[in-house]
Image (cartoon, rainbow over all chains, first blue to last red; front, side):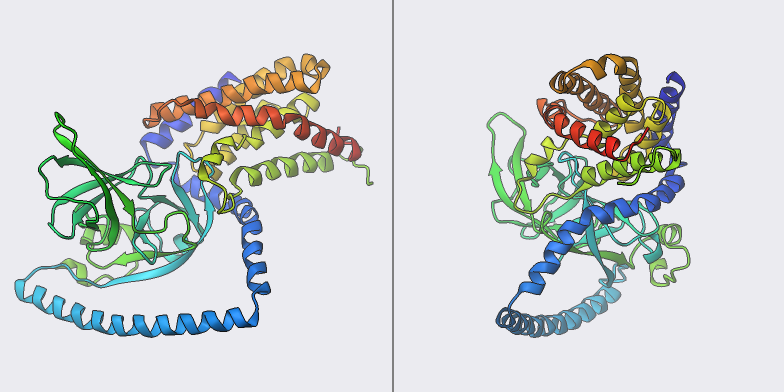
Length: 279
Length: 169
């Protein structure tokens, strides 16, 4: 008993301090993947059943709705493409390196960390799909989190609302740069060290600032929903609600940004040709 | 009903299947309409199944099995490798020392002991998280132990029926 206890402690220490155990953990994760898949079955079949029971009328209505939405988005995308091209041209003129071209991969949620204190989900894409640790994850409305653990078929995503997660953001209106930290269970973001006199108000849109080279620039992170100035305190209490639907999105997007630094690109995606990042 | 008494391998299969069932329950996502706070009530199913087999068949399920199960749970939940393993080893050690007395207890007396064991389990996990990160102690952390103690009679009866029907020895 004592031997196993000591062994556990040593394992934990090694796991915490080094990454030597990551490979074996990834291998074992593959072995337990069936458990995660089985646990997801009730949810999955419930959704399948709802789809099967949906009436013809409903389905037709939904198709029409989605078609009109698609047309709308197509128009927007075309405009976006033109703007992106123009933006890149202007950046070229300025000699700046950032390119606004991100590739995405769609993944599906297959599990949620059962501990309510940890805001973490499991998705069905892994090393086989070139997912890497630190990869940003979005949903259709905004930034969701980042990959913290990959195995062959699955990976673990830490959401921006986790207490141990912070994301560098920028206020769209005033360009004020801040750090947004998660608050845990109530799925809010808390802005750190906001000067009492800072130009920030309720309703301000927060975008990822791209500082720290982890998240790409310009994705919506949240909207400020409370600004409270406490007399006598140097910093104001500012909270924001995340733009992404952290507890509802079934489909997420994994972002492959091309403007990573060359060292990171080779370290993370060996074999992926990445010619543009060396500028 | 098929008897598996003569075949130790088949008996082991039953034990492994129940432990895996516990793992599935441990990661089962809650339906969307349930408030996330209820997640605090989720008992440590794997620990409960382990404790049952430790009491019922101590010659089959011992400290080593508890440790291995703990490692798998660590992988499953993404916690530090060894965290649940350590907790399970300690509760297995206590359960193995008490199993003869525990068998004499009524099921609700057992539930009381289980509350202590599961509470210790939570406490060990909290300590480790506290050392590795900066978890904050809340009384919520004892809720899974309470829920587990209340659910114990049903888990116990279910597993006993299973063990007797399938004659796992």
